[in-house]
Image (tube, rainbow, N blue to C red; front, side):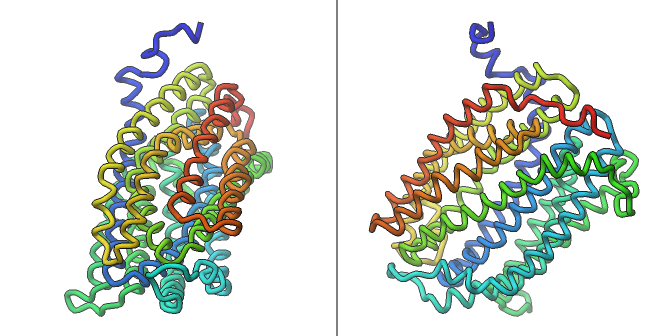
Length: 468
């Protein structure tokens, strides 16, 4: 009977459905849009100083990117339980998962600070190759290390912000993290302007100024979101005693380890895989490093729609699964996947036509601008496919199928995407644009795998029904 339902009933929801989805997604979209917009302006400001500075910061940010996704993976693994505890109405369970998140945030922040300190330079050197008209390798290395050493101080504030913001979102509180994020964005923007260029009596610190501005903004964001949470502990009951020692029940810790570890490992492998992928692209010269950076920053601004809608799938569907509303969870997931893909078809179209405009904001060479324009158009064409696989990932994750998400996400990336990129980089002299197009288009094949996994309903599980 399911296949005979009218198209609009199966794939398109009513007003109440979109009201629920957008109530979760829009605050995340707004916050992410502001964040990515300021990241764009930050990138342009550094790019106005010079191509070497932009490339150095871009390479250093690859390491920060690995950290941020490890935090995302670790907290998301715990967040599966938070969302389902919320659907179950278990405040004690929510508080305990938040405590586990705090421990993970501190441990990972210290670990990555050590990595940045002792292994930052050799990692950055992996991205430095001759082969284009643009760039100075020694200068790029120096700027990258300058930026990375400052970034050690933003790791813990960033991680703590994610602990509070993710827990609030998983309990259907989305506006305070959004407001805190927006304020932090403007703080970052203001200090970027003051410290990069030396305005209003501040020193012109260039790359260091960009890093310091980011640190200040993260501290402000943490103060705002944590302060609001504890001031409203009557409604955010998980905040009561959050920083006090508490014995977490062993069955819960075991379940979190079993379900969450694959997700954390997945994000570590995925982020490191993306870093290696960019290193493969960098074999075509420093101009490619700069162009890939421009493409990444610009595309992330357009990606806020499917990123927020994907996260919303994990929250909304996870709440329904925790409440044992299985049929509704399946129907909601189908409609949310369709909405995500349709929305990103519109965003991809806009990005495709605006692609020639974006690289002109950078003080760089014509070689870099042309490469960035072509990469942006390729990325735009693949965006709806990427949106679908992203939604499938969160669908599988919502029901605790973290090992399958591990296979679907990072295993695919390493087995297909990274392996293909390494073969092309090392065994051929293929120019960067067809190289980039082939690797990006591999997302289309992944869509088939995602569709087959989601339609089996293996993700439809209540994982907190028996948890104490």
